[in-house]
Length: 116
Image 1: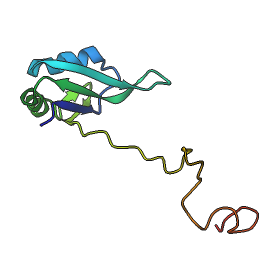
Image 2: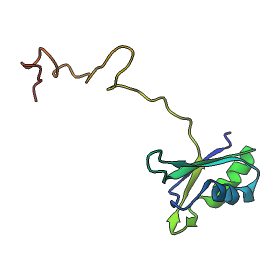
Image 3: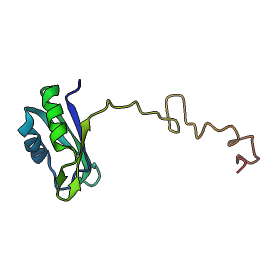
Image 4: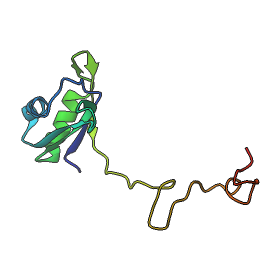
C-alpha cells in the first residue's frame, strides 16, 4: 500500500508548512508540497503529502477527508501513479503532425484544406 496522499480542493491560503503540520498529527510526514502555478506563483489548490508508513497515511485519510478548511471541503485520498503523457498533436522526433484525421491535410480538399 502507498504512503503518498493526494490533497485536493485546498484553499489558496494553505502553504507547505501548514499542510505538513496538519498531517503530522497522524504520524511522521516525509514531505508536504502544495502545487504552485509556475507563471503566477499562486497555489493550484491541490498538493501531495508523503508519510513514513501506510498506516499513518490511512489514519490521516480517514480523519481529514471531507474536513472543512476555510470553508472548503478538502478531498484526501491515496495518490495515483503519474500517467504517461501522450504527445499526439505535438512536435516530436518523428516530426510535426497536426492531426491523425485522414480527411484533413494536403491533397484531400484542395489548396491544403480539408473537408469541413
